[in-house]
Length: 145
Image (cartoon, rainbow, N blue to C red):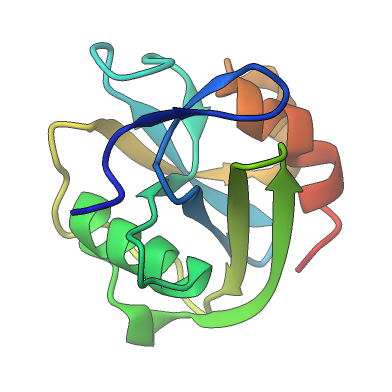
């Protein structure tokens, strides 16, 4: 995984993912699939998207799909990508890949990075302790689907 590693953005923040990062915002009706990050991970104990570092040759869509498969066993064929949002920090970016599913897919495998994966009503997401990056973009992301 050539994308694994820390880097700095033009805003002076330290980020995971030498080539940026990507995550999957999966919708089913008015619900969103969220991941509770393991306590030991960066921003552990917060809720966010299944995702992680991009590899040098991956598109954001490929990275988000790979991470969702690795972290929760979500098959790329079980949902349809409908959009994307790029949070550009200058020299580093996080791409949220927006997707929809007809059925509420259940995770088939969780890694040590994940404490829990849950379908959350979109209007209740703000009540959870959110990953700072997800919290900063949720207002925009909730309108993309």
